[in-house]
Amino acid sequence: MKKFFAVLLIAGILFGLVACQKKPKSVTLEIWNSSQTMTEFYDEVVTPEFKKLYPEVENVNVLYMPIQDYVKKIAVAVPAGDVPDLMEIEDSWATPFVTAEYFDPNTKELDAILDQMRPELRNLVTYKGKAYGVPISPFHGLMFYNLDILKAAGITKIPDTWEEILDAAQRTVKRDASGRIEVSGFSMRLGGNPAGTTQKFWVLALLGNGVDVFEESKTQPGKFHCGFNNEGGYNALKMYIDMLYKYKIDDFASMKDTEAFWNQRTAINMREASASTSIIRNGPGVNWVTAPMPIGYKQRATFLICLNFYVPKGAKHKEYARKYVELATSREMYRIQTERRAGFNPYIGVDPTEGLDARLKPGFVFPPDMKVYTVPVHNAYDASQVRLGEALPNVFAKAELLDNPEGIRREIEALARIVNDAYREFDEFAE
Image 1 (cartoon, rainbow, N blue to C red):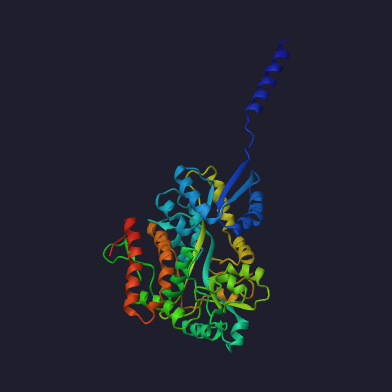
Image 2: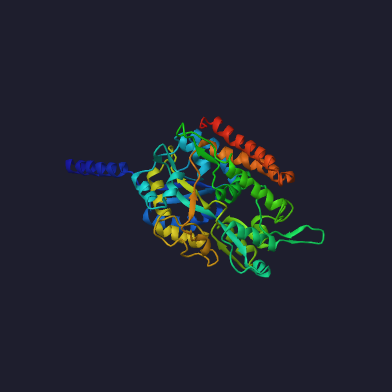
């Protein structure tokens, strides 16, 4: 009998030990983003490899939202702590959350990834000496040319200076019998998405004329004011006014942007490389090529803007989130992303044209004189960009500014006040 009870006791103990053992919990990683093509890249390329490395991760759910919906959601959700494990956000949209410390600073492993990328990209995610994210999808401005339209106008050399572009645009513009533009020489961004309107004016006119939207105060480092209330800003606006009303290479009524390009309704367009996917899909018969940004009146310049990965402070699975970042931003994944999305590979020492459509390759080779600009981590920057984009179309519409230096200077002063008021609003202003 004693032996029987001893067996029961041992069996009970063993059963209890087994019952007390916790089964490994399956993990579901949640990612929020606003890019449909990046969602496909995660689902089809990154996540399958990640689950091989970490089989305990049962699901990686990517919640895609259109940009406007996403911006509204994160404005409410992040301060409330209702966050996923990982967030993909464009740099300037993320700034308020970075400066308010809603995201974790990078670990040494994530910083090590940044150290292998172009040094300009660290500026996009750094606040008070700490980096808070890793670029997952950088993009830059470049030029698209319709080769058939150029050839018909007797142009065989791809323009490389602003003067050459202006000449080509005047020679390629076509009008109907009433004088209405049927094919623009250069498709100008004259309205629409405010941030996009500012962005095109920024890189094409302001940067090309040697000035930026902001500049740092010489008397109060860390404070800023408008950077274009000067001769460079005057020349930038004069350049747009002359394009519209002196050289008449575009107007408000013509078909615009990438849609115009794939319909062969413009000879030249400035855009990001991702526009190529729409051109290839919607205009398969268009004979086109890209080129780097031209030499402006003062300098050759482009931008690098990024979608970045951020780990929110309230994330449930931070370690897995960081491991996902490490994989998604690895050299191999960037190589695949370049092939699939015409993305910009930010790693130092790589061939940025590897895997690209041959027509895109020239636009990815930066000449030695190219200056690369990034978006700053300023709370006021996004607000100033949007407000400028809301004001610029009304300024561009003023034909009376042609050959009107005083009028142009007044408009530049008014635009400068918009920027300065935004920096005052966020206590980031100083002369």
